[in-house]
Length: 308
Image 1 (cartoon, rainbow, N blue to C red):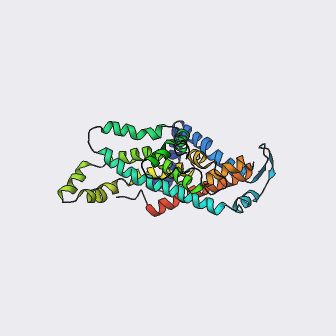
Image 2 (image 1 turned 90 degrees about the horizontal axis):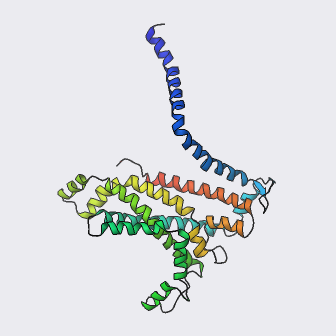
Image 3 (image 1 turned 90 degrees about the vertical axis):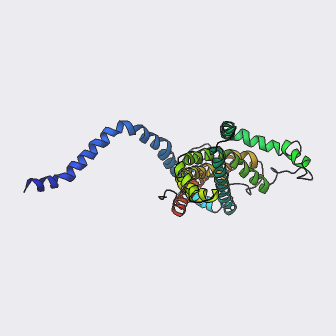
């Protein structure tokens, strides 16, 4: 066998050994990240799936295997179709409105104008405040008896008399969506703003020199280059909004029934009202699967990371 043939024969083995040595050398650097992923993501997810197949008492004692009984209880729950529809409307509506408003805000604060720094700082405030505190402010502000926001709507002539926005399912759910948009705007705006600042000014100026108007330049030149930033903002918003509990708990938690519930709030009602920890675990598995399906559908349909 010639030397060249011998070299070619040994090349795959040499490459594998080289990759193995490279992986071992990298372990001190990537080891902590791998540990965190296993400890914070994989282990809890696996334990959640395991609990969904067990019969767990009110005290949290594992009483043995339950098979598919917990999932059957979830899918036979009478209000589940309504709750699933609420979840889709909640997630899709909040994320869509947030991204659209953030696109406008990011373009606005990107421009030079007096007081721009103050405006940028003001945008952060809803993000810095506690979700429970923000939701509570809106809850009491809209109270029909002593709420300052309710009183202002009457004084401005928008309402004839005060209205119990947080006393019925539909209006409380819509108020919760508005609050969710309000607290989601800062993060979304700043992510899109970072993407906007990465767009070269030369391309924008070239578009103007070619006769493109402001909207055409934004739509044809700027927006396509915002695709990666939009992908990050949208995906993180989908996850955060889908799993959001504090806003709905404060604004709709006191409403009887399940007309204002999403799958996340229903899961906690199973624990708090029915003491069904095992059924709640099965619903959390369904929640996990739903958010994965929503993200996969978004990536498949929108293709946010496609080359511009």
